Image (tube, rainbow, N blue to C red):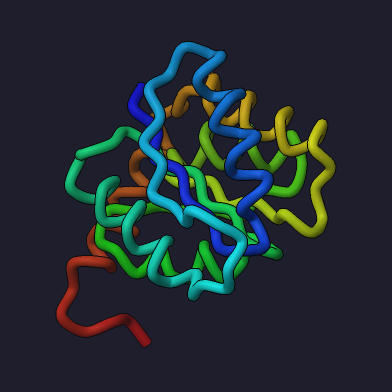
Amino acid sequence: MKIGIASDHRGYQMKNRLIQLVEGLGHHVVDYGPESTDSVDYPDFAGSVASAVASSDIDRGVLICGTGIGMSIAANKFRGVRAAPCHDSVTAEYSRLHNDTNVVCLSADQLSDQLADQILQIWLQTEFEGGRHKRRLDKIDTIEGADEQPA
């Protein structure tokens, strides 16, 4: 798979380490930045990866910030992006099995290197289950495409 990865300044070290992991698993990685630990605004980097996922330039995305939450909020503003902050193996697995997430968001502040590696490996290897979950995602797509949001 072609995997895009980006972080903010707080996730910079984890991003660089995870690039090596993902490449070691045989995936092609596109690094969307940043290039240093200088302070940056996470929406800029979330937007680069989410836009690439939405346009199918990459297959999936990995975003890292202090909590994973800000990146998730920003990425989910892009049509067709399903981003989830994952904090353990269960959320990583089920975000793929049931929700077909195409962007995983990680916390540089809360996750150990070992746990971040485990989460990412599970997320990359888990396939979408489909079935009733596909029907539910179709309903989300309908909401996303509506001119007016439901009350």
